[in-house]
Length: 115
Image 1 (tube, rainbow, N blue to C red):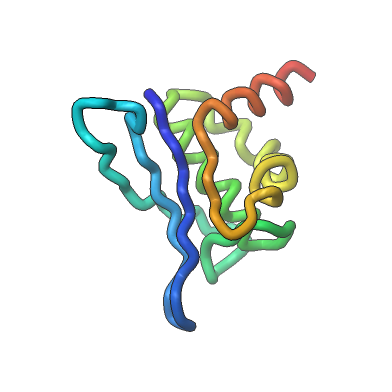
Image 2 (cartoon, rainbow, N blue to C red):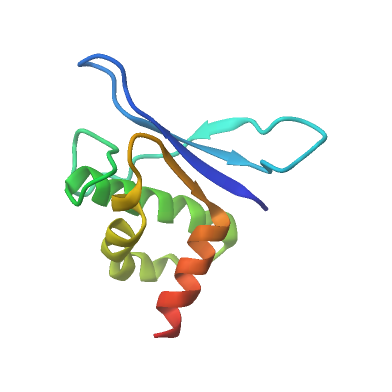
């Protein structure tokens, strides 16, 4: 399965940032249908954020990893040990637009789990 996570910044004071997962994004038969990923709230009651190392990006990292692991049937028990590193290695580097491909997550996981 091919997945890309795309974040959209909220507009106005009352709008939260949203992250969509587009599954089967390389399908030529039909365009992918986005779905909002669930905010796994641990650090930030305000929701998703990216581009720096704070509490919103921590929840973004946690939420994306939970979604990705559910899609790939990976053991979710390791997420608590790696999501802060994912925040600093991947989420911090996202600027205005958050765009993370499943291949990037898989490569990152393989690299850190080898060590």
